[in-house]
Image (cartoon, rainbow over all chains, first blue to last red; front, side, top):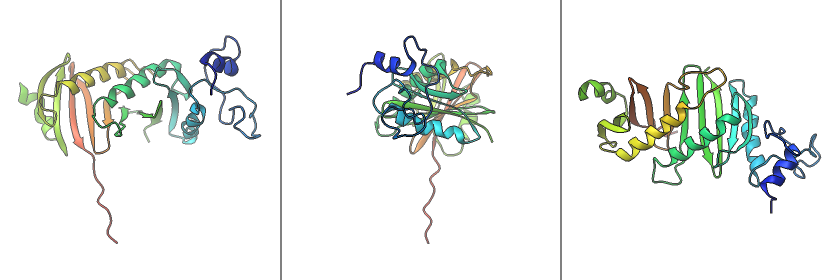
Length: 138
Length: 99
């Protein structure tokens, strides 16, 4: 069973850490299997949160993607890159939760898109994790 | 007045309903969104929350259109003249290719 949130934060950022920009993929303790940086700290969040956040972080490799963010149901930033940062986690979490109320089907998870001329921010909830991707218009 | 607000919405392809909302109140509605005050309230809240999202470059507002995309339909929301215009559209269904 995972430790307390405080233990997670201390493991990740040390005493008094801010939580901004957690380590990149492969940083999860005991999970990286000898990869570079495998002994690094583990980001805060529910069990498996880091693994589930790695996939959106990989989407940063797409040239059109300029920001990604993962947050939990309480708006805690689990990881972010680029144009999306800590301050956006709360709003992103709320948007996904409110959008889900627009349907009575709990299996029909909506994608919330904030569309503008410059690009889109796409938000979707996956189990307990909400993922946001900021993609520029091609 | 109602027809001036809604004539454009009625012409949206594949639309199955629309709402016009002002200050949380429904000014006009049609189709599957007829008298749907619950959705109107939720969408008003969604727009208010989304308006608070500010990116580094400070787009004001941060979106021109807010879409909520479900499996078979989408709710498309835009803001104009202090009013929310919501259209419910069926998602385009790709017919299977028969080989």
